[in-house]
Length: 411
Image 1 (cartoon, rainbow, N blue to C red):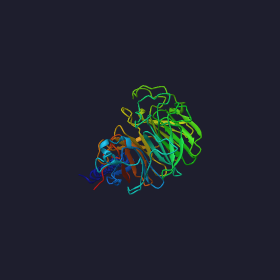
Image 2: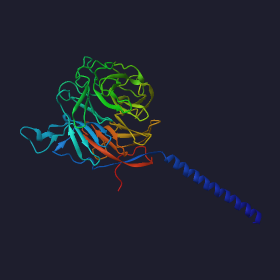
Image 3: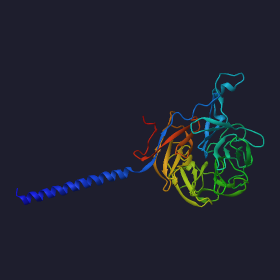
Image 4: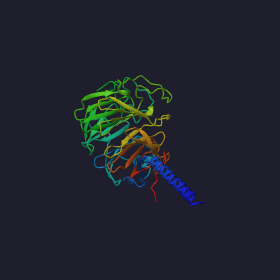
């Protein structure tokens, strides 16, 4: 081969090699870019919380929140316990164990129980079926309920409610962190529907805006609205239904994912969460959707989560990440037994974790969710789940699986 042909061939091979390297780099960076969707990495802490004292056991854990000190508060239903779980309280005593823990429990970061109280007292109505707990920016503790008249009986999400007010829990309660009663908003059994501003009807959850000292109530299992009061005077401010409409109590047919979105909330309106930028997130649980509002009730947008979910619905509760922009949303999905991790600005689902079961990292059925200042995630379970779990924040990581399953600790 003459020298010119050799040099030409060598140059051609060099070009091909360069193109090959470039192609390889493009492919690799393209793959890296595709894999570089980031989300919080979490691992269940199977040792949290520590065992309760006094042979105490907890029923359905129906409320969960983290306070400014990263203490975790739960409220549970003593009435959800079976007789055999309370042998120690029988007369005569049937065995050494067990007894229902007080309804409100406070844990520190290490999982130690550091506070307990709750139940009927002087000057207020105690819910017949506890539902939801929140500790506001002043340290006040707010409690709701979704029970009928008489003994413990929670309201199912698809039950109609007697317009004459045949429910007990038409109020929320305000306490100090030591359990001293401060105020009651609404009166037991007095609800007149979704446009009654003096009473609630089976309220599911509350949140207080630290900027305005306004109390937002997801109201709830009987009503179909968000309603706002002054958190000190309890003076009514405003209320609205889905899309910012005036709420309507006309009974809706069962949710059908193939139909046009319902123009009213279905029961229950299950959560209300306020972001630092003033956006308000509302759980329309059995409609499988999150609706986003401004604090004046102006509708902003909505997103369906696991849209084909029937049963109890997919959007049970919401918690926001604690980075400055609150970039991520955690959605507790009690029907599908998992937590969805969403990007807050687009409401796109990035990944999920959890699975059905009773081992650490599994759920039955995940009901409430909260985050602390360190990014850890806490969940509670209703029905026969009857527990609270902690998921340790391990930083951000590339999403490699849409459904992670059980996020068990690495060895």
